[in-house]
Length: 363
Ligand SMILES: Cc1cc2nc3c(=O)[nH]c(=O)nc-3n(C[C@H](O)[C@H](O)[C@H](O)COP(=O)(O)O)c2cc1C
Image 1: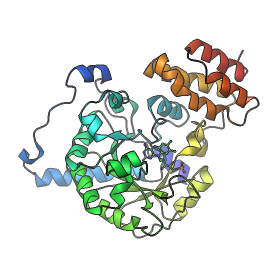
Image 2: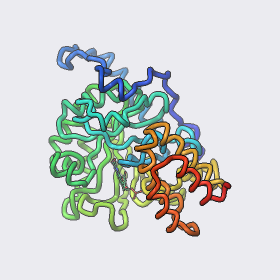
Image 3: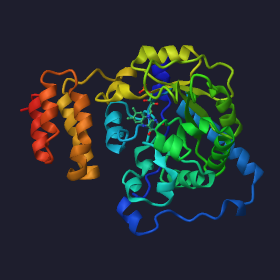
């Protein structure tokens, strides 16, 4: 059964690592120096053993799993931890991380740079268009305890896909896509996955080709968002049958419940990734896996999530950031419109807490 398989296949937590702190990172070089790649002699036995181990780990991560999608501005550590309150060990992916910003230690990027080993089973997603920089970024994230590296080849946002030549643009340049995947798989021991879409637009649905390129260059699995770059996030996702491909495929797009996930397995997918259906419902993974129902005390979940956001970002940045989560948590409840108007004007943490407690009837 799908859900029992999922529960047994939780990747073992790594040994806790030294906590990397973004502030230290900005003032001092935190990233260990590595010898240049070309200076390292290739040891065939070591290579074969590593490939074998990587194969086993990637099976554990990708097979029969429900993933939480990488979502910029949403899937940060506080949200990932709130998901795991209900579904411990469920594989989660970070927001996309720019390889330029990470390697260049830009302040905004380091804000979310973490010790992923503490969390366990976190895939770190990177985007960029320069193979060497992508490899360096992957190495930094692997050293920080990421369980696998996910390469973004699906982001349609013009800043990423057109101006930076990264994300979805790589669906148009398969040679560069192959070089990036090879550069990343060449430097990290952990599995590498690729997240992409059906194609650039309805006239170029060449995802099968990209899957083969990913496999040829050492990727362990591909997550396939069932829309084109041109479709963005609109319209219903389409999920093609995925038999006879060299590596496992994870389904993504409009998946909302266990029945949706089950139907993806019927189409040949190895697992499923949940995106917008997790907004305001961090318990959805626990629910799908049969571990919990929707909690009666949503107010307590919201308060716990808020507490993590404030601990992580501080009140000044955390309060405005939390507004979107509050809009999702409160959607469909009585007086949610008035509640949203009110909280959008609040900047103080304790005032916000009072409003939340009042809205969910905890006072
Ligand atoms: C607000 C937002 C942020 C996103 N950020 C990322 C991202 O950082 N990396 C990525 O690969 N996809 C990103 N996506 C795409 C999602 O991971 C997912 O592929 C998409 O939402 C389709 O799944 P869904 O229909 O279940 O939402 C984002 C989507 C949204 C709506």
